[in-house]
Each structure stands twice: as structure tokens, then as C-alpha cells.
Image (cartoon, rainbow, N blue to C red):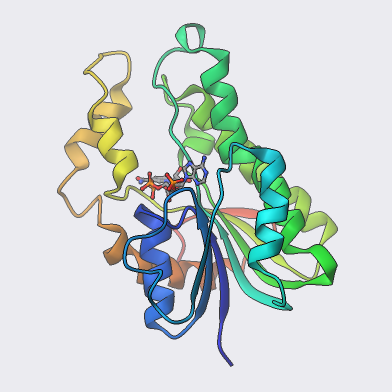
Length: 238
Ligand SMILES: NC(=O)c1ccc[n+]([C@@H]2O[C@H](COP(=O)([O-])OP(=O)(O)OC[C@H]3O[C@@H](n4cnc5c(N)ncnc54)[C@H](OP(=O)(O)O)[C@@H]3O)[C@@H](O)[C@H]2O)c1
């Protein structure tokens, strides 16, 4: 049977890599982001809706329209995310932090509610989290808070929906636009973790999204062995 997959943040990076991998494997893929993913629109089996996940009220209607007539999703990947400003808490604007929380956390509530609308079955939900959810590195402020909240959100949905397997997955370091933006952050001795990212670029520690996608799909399979709602890291999940 054809696998049906829903992905947020499908226009670049990890979400784009996953969409391509699933399409190559013959899956039916539904994707959202603001920009259309280059080259995927023409592929049979791919449907796209442009949605701004910071516009919280617009999300549910757009996702419901995209999934009209779809009775079951095998997999939903909540991948869209932004980094926000790197800086100490006191020097980061609440406005910037709120935007990070809107896109990385709150948007996933209307997305999930729309996925389950009308009794649609969803086999597995994987939220793309980060080691930052637990590491509290200096300067990562709202990003770390958002990923910790996302992990908890998966636990809470897991508690109320036993028919769906939920988890949060840290993908490790991946060579995407997000990492490019991190490398553009001016060197600052306070934020040692940013320097570590600079050093990891171009090494096997930071694969391309295309190279990582098959490993992520394997990891998502292995996540099913964990209790629903748990957090796993692709680097330690065997
Ligand atoms: N790269 C890493 O090393 C790494 C490590 C740990 C976790 N992650 C997580 O992986 C996920 C994907 O990031 P990435 O590294 O692949 O970065 P990316 O290339 O910048 O991709 C981010 C995706 O999110 C979408 N997005 C951002 N803001 C949006 C908005 N307002 N509305 C709709 N879609 C939006 C973007 O689409 P549009 O701009 O077209 O809207 C894009 O498709 C994120 O959740 C990130 O936190 C990445």
C-alpha cells in the first residue's frame, strides 16, 4: 500500500531531503512551508500548500484544504523551525522569542488538530527537535525553550491519542540554511556552541540533508520501539 506522509517545512533542508527520499520510495507526500520546494511540485505524488506558520489562525484551514479526502496518514513530520537570534536572554527581544515559539511550538497545535480533523487516522507523528531541547547552551534562548516545549507537546498529545505513536527526534547537525545562518553569527566567546558548529561544517559530523534522509527514516522506524511521546536522538538511537 502507498505510504502517505505529511511534512512541515518542506521547502529546504531536512524537510526537503525527507520529501525527496519518500517520493523516491513511492510515497504520497503532502508538504507545507512558505516557499514551494524547488523541483518537487512537478513530481507525481507530491502536493503542496504555501502556509506561513507564524500566522496561527491561517494554519488549520490551509492544512484541512490540502488534506481534503485523505483518510489516513502513515507519518506526519513536524519539521519546520527557525533559530531566532543568538544572544543572552536579557539582550534578546521578546518579539523575536515569541516568533520562535510561534513557529517552533504553537503552530504545531493547529497543524496537529487539522491532521486529526474529521477522525483522520495518523499512524506516527515525529517532531524534529534538537539536542538544544536539553543542553541549555548559552545564547540559544528561545530556540532551546521552543524545542523543550515541543518535546513536552509530543508527550501531552501521546497521553490523549493512544492510536498514534508520537515522538520528538533530534536529527544531529545537518548542513542546511539554518546552519549557514549560524555560521554568519559574529564570533563571540560567550557562545562557544556556535564555534563548535563552525568547526563541524564540511566534516562527517554535519551531513547534507539528502545524505541524512535515509538514516532519519530508519531512526523514525526505531522510534516506534520507544514509549509514545518520548524524545530520541538520531546519534544515539540504535
Ligand atoms: N540543521 C541542523 O543542524 C538542525 C539541528 C537540529 C534541529 N534542526 C531542526 O530541523 C528543522 C529543519 O531545519 P533545517 O535545518 O532543515 O533548516 P532550513 O533549511 O532553514 O529549513 C527550515 C524549514 O522550515 C520552514 N519554515 C520556517 N519558517 C516558516 C514559517 N513561518 N512558515 C512555514 N514554514 C516555515 C522553511 O520554509 P519557508 O522558509 O519556505 O517557509 C523551511 O522549509 C528545524 O525544526 C530545526 O530546528 C536542525
